[in-house]
Image 1 (cartoon, rainbow, N blue to C red):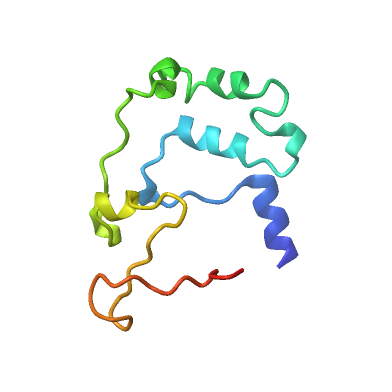
Image 2 (image 1 turned 135 degrees about the vertical axis):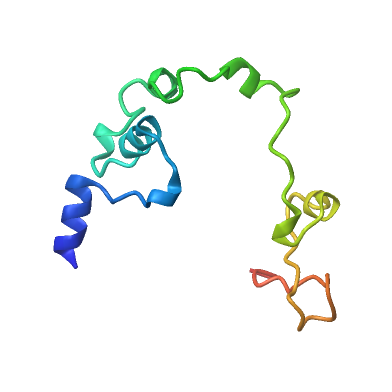
Length: 114
């Protein structure tokens, strides 16, 4: 197992063809996931180094930081509606698949009283 880990660390993991990631995206991910933390993208100049990377350089960082920037569309296929997902930001709802009192019933909180 250690041989596989060492090979992955030195040559990287293969990207599945279905990922559709371009060379720039693969380079950015590889630079962010380097084994040596000192060699990772952002380790020497912080966020400015990340923003300057070819993959991220075209982003409008002011728009990203803006409170008015639209977020990604909400994906209800994960089992929530926008209302249920934002009802309590301190404790996200976990919807039961069926054994907790019917469809849409909230699952017991495994961290209650922790």
